[in-house]
Image (cartoon, rainbow, N blue to C red):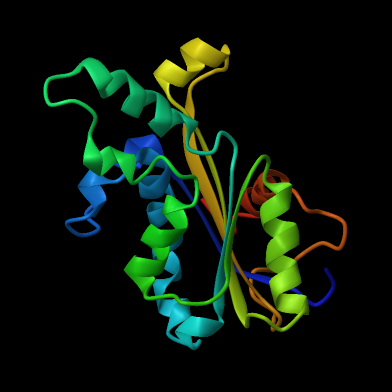
Length: 195
């Protein structure tokens, strides 16, 4: 991962969603997409420095679309039946589409289900291979109340985003062996480089 720099970092939590104003689409999105958009929004000025087809989006999501899937399925007995609007978000990659639409990005993208290590590893590969000039890496962790009850997990709703590129100095050089976004965020927060 040498010569890869963290240019910007941001995080978002569910408490920020209610007051966010990011266009007409925002209110109908699933929580994962809303959190990812909020986490990435401060990167908008950085995107002006790149061709839109040279910016990659890499998302890792802990539970995939399961929180939305559970909500969608619970609506089967509701008046009017299943929600066609919610159906759009029953794919984990829907968040990539929302980010791409909001920022007009047409570069490579990838969505994985799991921990945050996948996002950084894949994002760095896009930079190393020259497929992208910059990468937005996002880790979304949403465990809704309904999913928490089914899976026996604690409720959570947060997103972390990093903007990576090959040129520095940025906020920090990406550590060679550190591929965990959560650990990197803790380090940046301790250095007062992110919220």
